[in-house]
Image (cartoon, rainbow, N blue to C red):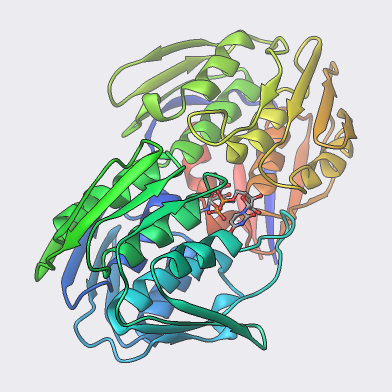
Length: 417
Ligand code: EPZ
């Protein structure tokens, strides 16, 4: 159990670079086994989820090393096509390996955990996409077993723009004979980054970033090198922290076009924001004003992952801030913890109402999930006193030493075990 000690009342000031994207690097690591090849990735964030994925790659027989944000993977010695429950339970998004292993081995066996902190996390869209390509996919005793040595290109229609299902379909389609079109695809920037990597690996595909992705073939190369996309949610979290603390920060290695909806809400809340191609600067007022209602949607809508940190930033905003969470069933767990600081948060189904209060006061909190934990840190920055956040390594899943990042901006955050 890690304990975050966060001193409130210090406006954040300074400039730091944005870490590489967790949600870009994870599918790219899965894609690195599509064919026997060597991959070098730069700008890789040092995260618990990346560490678990490295263990999965080594379990499969690959060589994988990470050194100072550079990762080397050699997938030529891959020798297995299964991922056991002991690894899958630690990282449920590893279901993305299903398409990659099926493409490489012609079969795959993954144990699948049930839901997670955010609610049920079904994978029906993933399995239907593989079946559409001709794979035989069955479930036995908690395992997903996929067989399909001869996949055939087809049209895959996703009834919901699932990020993971889109990525799994892209990877499996690389093994298919003939052209595959994915309709209703998710449009997240992380999917565009995956397409960039796949092209460097020898895949012929277009359309990522739109609702229609076409995979025409795959002629594997022996080597691929790729720089990981900046993490738009980590960037949004730091900006929310600056807004909550009344500070003034600049972020480099950012791509503001990837989180315009978050910037719009922060601007409506009274922050002065200046953007350039790869930097974002934010100057917060002493006290925020409630922004217009925030409704989470698939990209390019407001990202669900930024909902908790923005909620935390708005706890003292003048007026009432309204959130509607449309992506996950149970993504307001952080609300009860934020109330312990003195926040006024009421939840009615998918809608959260935040009535801005004059002050928040430090209280011990418990992080229940990755973004909820980050929200508690953001809120603690605007609370009087030192807040302790008890965290079973949720936050380090997605943030690369967030304590160091915040302290580089003048915060007083320390972690004890
Ligand atoms: C990705 O999760 C991200 N994770 C999530 O980030 C992010 O919140 C989510 O996309 C939405 O943007 C990674 O990229 C590793 P989905 P994913 O499939 O792929 C339902 C974070 O904090 N659904 O788009 O799992 C599902 O239950 C994490 O960084 C089905 O019903 O998201 C959910 O309600 C959290 N059937 C909705 O779709 C399926 O087969 C969105 O899921 C798949 C999904």
